[in-house]
Image (tube, rainbow, N blue to C red; front, side):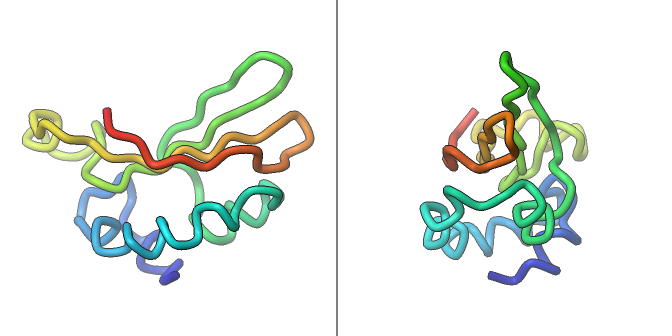
Length: 100
């Protein structure tokens, strides 16, 4: 996967992440079991982060333009994102692509 292109497209605003969606889908299941540092090296800083109970967290990376992009992006019907769920030890437990 082209990690540099992914990291350069913050919040998916440029649309470059949409071109990488298929590659992300191909490696998605291979990410389970990796550590948080490996995820950050591959995808960069998350666009959004959710903290859950028992020190679990979810990193969210927008594939299609996210809510922090232009106002036109907020109105787009389909927002696609990659969600990486980690346990308290920083190990990836679940990786999903979802639509908001």
